[in-house]
Image (cartoon, rainbow, N blue to C red):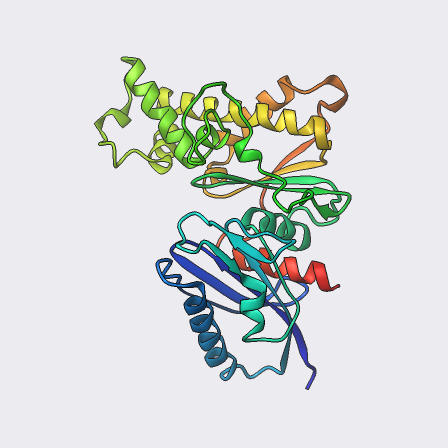
Length: 319
């Protein structure tokens, strides 16, 4: 029987941790998850993860070999192998590489979740054959992974590529990072909700969204209203697209990417977000860059994207 070579991809989140075994073509042979239990030590999570993995491996009929472990996690540093003060986790500083090697003696590589998404896109998604692109993750926050000449940009300390915290509005909204006016405060799912609330409060224009309570107003309800041609909801998408498009135009000056790839919940709004992003990006580009840059949705399936990204990280390092 031929041995199947796989890598273990792990995505650590504040609520749940996903893991899976993936081959070099992006086929997921095994997928599972467990509660992170973020209030407990990291050692407890990793111990439970490998117990669950071992139980699943015992039931696999295929002859497999695991070649390495890739991990996507908040504030994970590719150079040091550590997570430092991650949001939504009680850990202060955790040496993930050392912790994993206590359970499996294989190559281990870590990076943050946005970087992992970019590598997953390059290996298995819509950035195949691209050497220069930027993946932007539009979720609760805004993450980004920047690929230049086929390599992810880490910078001198491992923390490069934080487009979500570029200032787009001087003395603007408070961001979760503590600074004012970050792109994340305007172009995320949270940001569009804040924009919608401002539009509702600053005008008397009719909108079905006025019927919703503060807790009911979300990127999803704004999306549904925009589909019904609610003018304020459409304005919220236009404003969000303006901030993101202008941010992408600025990033183009540094990196001249072949494409921007948008991933995450807000990106699934399709033309509602892609059209204004394209309009404002092109309007703010130097002439030499206009009409050259593609804006694409992610080619990764949402359900497996985190696992594929983490797996692509270690495949990239060992091949």
